[in-house]
Image 1 (tube, rainbow, N blue to C red):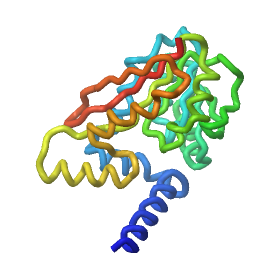
Image 2: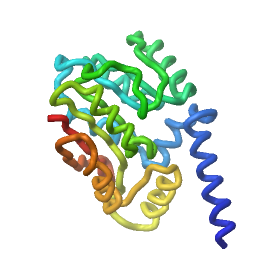
Image 3: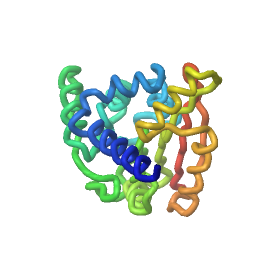
Length: 220
């Protein structure tokens, strides 16, 4: 049984890696399916907690296929996008080109941001992998933010209501490596207690048949 479990999780991790790389072109469809269509609402839930665009440039870490990146640019933000996957970068690049939007993308890791100290008013990161909990990542977020800057994270979406249909999609969403229960979404707050940020707030945003959990890390 343990052998089968190990094989299963190796396959899941392999599939998860493909989803962010060679199969990145399927990411939007997979995300829409496993979220029952709520994915874009979960992504956009972070926007209401951002400072106004004229406060300064914004950094989006792990921009993925660029949908939120486009939202931010169209809302008037001067936003720079960073992602480690070249496949995600190519997809976002093409989307920005088609819309005639400024191309400000780079490839890099959250643990070692290629930016000067204190230049971003905010950082946005939606549905990141485990790198966001690493000490080096949080230190880098803190370093590149201006005084009184914000790091805003959407770690998970949680389905509300019951029934076998919702239970199945909750399981399916967790298989992608990003789903969480309400209790787990709250427990991750402990990972930020020893971070360099002075204040940690959590907000719940209602979406269709679900809720998004937004964490705001404040540098004060």
